[in-house]
Structure formats: C-alpha cells, structure tokens
Image (spheres, each protein chain N blue to C red):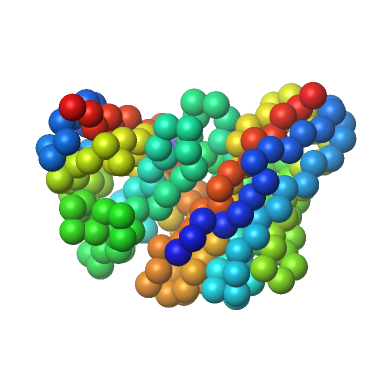
Length: 122
Length: 111
C-alpha cells in the first residue's frame, strides 16, 4: 500500500529556512510525479511544486526562487527546501503523488501524506 | 491563475443529494476534460474522489458522481451520509507545463 509521511515542519522566524521531507513507501518516487500542496490555516489548497522523474521542476509564482523541490532516490524521499520564509508561507504542507491520466501533464493527486505544519512568525 | 469558484457551503439531510459547482474559464475547466475532485475531512489530508471529470478511483462509492458543462464542473453526492460531511475541492488542468488550479472549496454539512 502506498504511503507518504512528511516531517520537518515547525516554527520559524521570518527570513528563515526550513526543509521538509516526504518519505514514500509502496511505490518508487524516482518514477513518479511528486508534488507539494499547501493549505494556509482556514484556507483552500494551493499546488506549489512539481518534480518529474527526469528531474524537471515546476513552481507556483508564490514560491518560485525561494523553494526548491528535490529527491533522494536511495531514500525514496522527496524534499522541499524553503528559504526566505514569510508569514504568508504559514500553512500545512502536503506531499502528494500526482498523475496525468490521459492528459499531457500531471494534474490530479492520488496519494497524499498527512501534512506537516510550518508556522512563520516573529 | 485564479482559483476556481465554488460555493462556500452546501447542505442536505441524510439520504438527500447535494450538488457542488466549480466554475472556471476556457483556460481551465472549459478547455479540457481534466477535472478532479477531493474530499477533505476535518484535520485530514484530501482524498481523490473523481478524476478526468467523471471517473471514480477504486474504492470510492458510486454515490459520488460528477459532470461538466462549459466552464462549470459539478460534483453530486447522492444518498447523503453523516460521513460525507467534509470540505470538497475541485481542481483543473490548465495546460502543459502549468501547475493546475484548485477551487475555493465547499463545506458540505449533513443536517
């Protein structure tokens, strides 16, 4: 059974950095579309990052240049390095596996982790 | 890319049906047959319930159905049960090399 477990969240000052980890089991992250989706408190979902099997990455405008998605195939783990954090980055961060189905680009998410809370505050 | 528009809330009594709309533009919902829906119970991760507009993953009850007309997609939950009380989000493909866009979310209450 596929499973994703996020770790690394916590409280951080504005301007600081944090790295989230997402350990996968039951499938291989190196051959999957892996993503990060976040949800600010009381708000909706926002897709922020995507990693292809060939290493190509995509980012939402809100995090481009500050966040970096990567993976370690040997650990079957995906990471989200978050730099220059602001209060607007406060959210639960979900790791998810994305699928393309019949589309030319992944667009839906069939496996989700439980999420990791990141709180940015002075 | 702006969020897709969903009604903030919807409700129904047990056994009744509730339909949630998800309105976008020709650049997302209206332009492609790639809409997905998610159920998120309080404090939990979202769960995929519909993809490619109408398809249900294995294990999702057939009480959940969906459709699309023009720029608006819809999710119908028939035979409402207490366990269906949750937030529901739509999501649409927006073209190659673009991250998709989520809806604003709808809270479904079972009266």
